[in-house]
Amino acid sequence: MNASLQIEPSAHVSERYARRVNPAWVRLLELLQMNVRYETCRGVELFTDEGRQILDFLSGYCVHNVGHNHPDVVRALQGELERCGPAMIQTHVADLAGELAEKLCERAGGRLSKAFFASSGSEGVEAAIKFARAHTRRPGILSAEHAFHGLTCGALSLMSDKFWSEGFGPLLPETAAVPFGNLEALERELKGGLRSASGLPAGCGVALPPLRHAFCARRSADRDVPNRSFSRSAPLRSRA
Image (cartoon, rainbow, N blue to C red; front, top):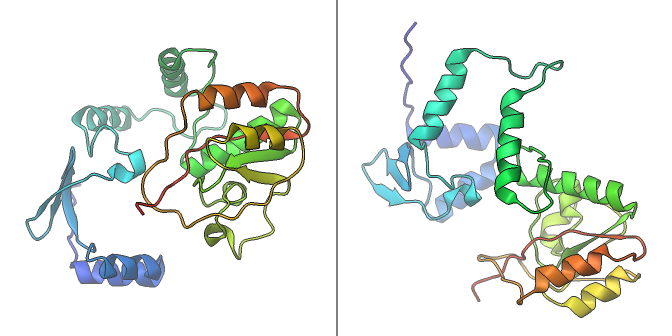
């Protein structure tokens, strides 16, 4: 049976989304004059229902790192759907997941031998917290000041800016934030004692660490220090 997609007026779509999902998001887009209707997206180009062509520099927070609707990705998805193979069967070994994990580990190199699949960045951070605690047997978690980790409760616990976490407590105990790139502060926290931190509003851009920071931080975290695990994430930095 053939079914054609009915294109609804943009105003009706926004009104329904505001009523049923998130009115604040619609208000923000209206304020920024960014509430436009996209009909087609290919590569880095977005085409609106008014005939405008827009270049996408955001890339869905790096979700579309091969571009929108890449033909190879579309072809692979269509092929798998048409195959009518198993999906979400509890007593099933997912062969494609194993194949993808093998290729990811091969390309990553180093000591990485397994992959964990998640549906969002927040879910990945939550898994990292669990993996760190299970592996180190340390309950505490360190993170970088002003970093954005996600909006689930565990991820919120690692963000020093109370703008994100206010009203959602209590969050995870025994968490602390250190200035990004400050190895001395990192060493102090790893040796014991919590450090109170107050963040600035998260903005745009990514702050790069000083040279060799990641290597030294990894070495410090691997030492036998009391009750801390280490989570890395680059802080967001305002343009100002």
